[in-house]
Image (cartoon, rainbow, N blue to C red; front, side, top):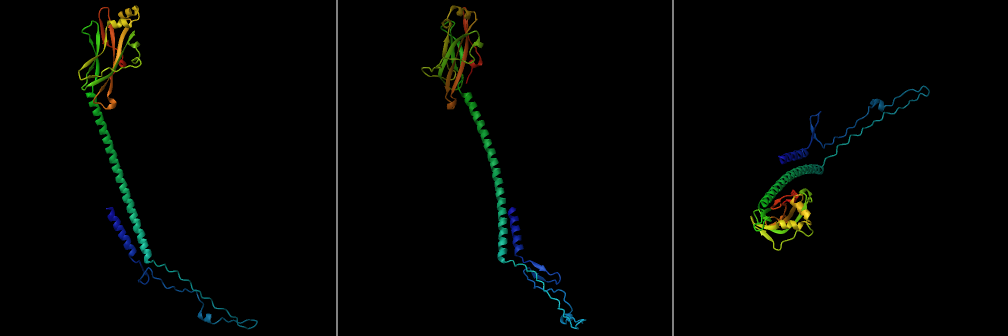
Length: 304
């Protein structure tokens, strides 16, 4: 539609410039071209009577009786108005070319603006598509991470009484996940405190711990391994005096055993393969029987 309008407008301009303007003569009803140069007409100022111009006026001098001569009035011719300059065909062609160039320039600007608007719309569509793709990729990543977390191994700590020794307990690490786990390091420590609130805020270990086992322990789903054993004889080894041993028997002080297990899985990305399980137990020391139960704050019983 825009090209048709521009073509019609250019054709009308060319026709208007090619037509020869004609001026109508209002008085005679005849027409003459615009380049017509009228013949300059002489206009005269009022002239005296021919007789008086040809014959000097005579009069009688009262003293000498001589006739006095009076000159005739001067006749002036007005200069004719200059004729308009003719418009040559070179000037017409130049003017037409300038008009065509202006139209072409206007059309170029119009199409350039239209093209920029289209590019802007395409850029907006591309940004929307990129945002949608990023959202889809993020959702796919979250879904993959949830699948990995659901399929990864989870090492949990359980306590089992010893079958061979009375009042002795075994701390077991069991793989409750769906894929194999490899235990790379373990550590543990015992501490005597009035209650679990008197324990350090976060677990403290000796320098250089945890230590790696001599042989990496690989646990398939549902398999367990022993990471620590504890019995009544270990309590006596912790006490530096008989009085402290009696305070433990009367529960004035308590014995805590805590530690952690570091393990790897085989399906997570390289940066997310290492996991950690922290555990803490309270050894309940009685006069005849003893027990070992899970205790401690969340910092002592965390999973990563």
